[in-house]
Image (cartoon, rainbow, N blue to C red):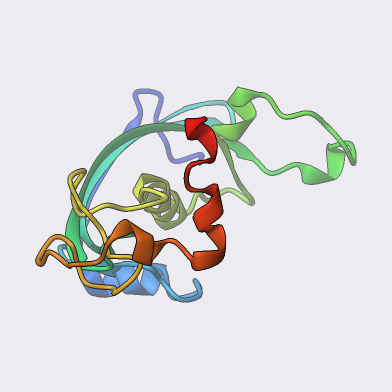
Length: 174
């Protein structure tokens, strides 16, 4: 932290998939694969011990569509700002209310900031909760299971609805 000059420090580079896999090594089963290397640019500026990281990351991930379960390429071109503060958790009360600004804050311990951790957090935050191969994705047929993007099934709505629930089908039409 003390090595960051007043005018700021620019850290940019590119890392390969091996570095990315090593960065996520401690994570349990990943729901994505790395397709391309990551390009990043981070500008660090500090005020005393508070550090502002203004940067961007760019890479491609392999994700599974949440509707049709097909693999697709997801491009991340993500700009972000993050505040990093020294970790002084022992001075905090047991219960406290967080503000929106607190959610944008990250922490470092000692006198070194782990830029890999910042990059890892930004990759995770860039991945959609329900990834879709496309907004027009039709998904899987809930009855026969075929991919509706590739084929058209002959399932009728009555076959899809469980027989015990058919009585509720017209409930709101009255």
